[in-house]
Image (tube, rainbow, N blue to C red):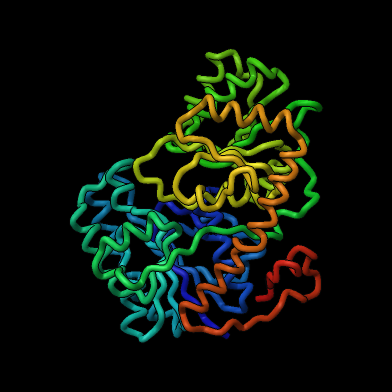
Length: 409
């Protein structure tokens, strides 16, 4: 049996949480198990209830730096490399080390290189720039030095978008190692006739958003566009699935416009509840504003599409490649609330168009963007052969058999 060490030392990625990064980590773990591997999880953020489908994962908790001032916390995070190295040495032998890149971790990739193992480093964002812009980064030089160590030691670097790949290519040690591997979906979570959550009033057109409520998700634009639409089409409402720092601002904006009663905020919900909430929407949106460096591979959009929803997204970054206008979704200029309103109104008027776009979107992601395909890519890059075959085990759903997904572990 192939043995894989999965490493995540990022303090902001609760592996068993409800954030997008949490879902991403869970789906990678699940897909690796589905390929017949034994997976050992080394993480600083392994608290919480483990989903039954991940019960086979062996958890090796790593110490978390104590809360406090940023500089000592950064130093404590760097010191965690010693603990990680010791844990990997004690937990082996392994056939592959797979790590989610974090600011202060290099021991996983260096352990793999020195042990003669493939080390694959998944890079989801230009974390140094992100930390400096949105949070606090004291020791930037230290973060850059650690990135060079990790990138240099890795066998392959898996970037979630071409924009992240371009950032990686700015490090000479990374050149020639970078592979673009976008996010995906788990078809099992999105059956064709999923029962909607019992929250949609009859005859009301529901516009949905799923994700952490942060400024760069374009929530101000969404409220502006909805206000324009609701003025002309009163039988409309917003369904906001998720929580975050912008929730209060968004709710206050809606209230100031007299629209508080037209919006529902679910707060953070377990992943298992998301498909039913998506099924209760008529259209889903990803209204990103103008961003100078859009490097995301938006998990929400892949899941919207898997649920068979028509999607309206900003014409930016990876979304321009994923969504073909008029074929499997609609694109609008980023930052243009008027254009977003017009697209929403069009989809409200044209139910046949909604159905056609949603079905085409679903077909695309189930064919080309699944976590099973990501796991195949991981095994291929690592030079490993899967231990599992087709999804014909007892109890496999028809959608799993069709997609070729195997949960056997």
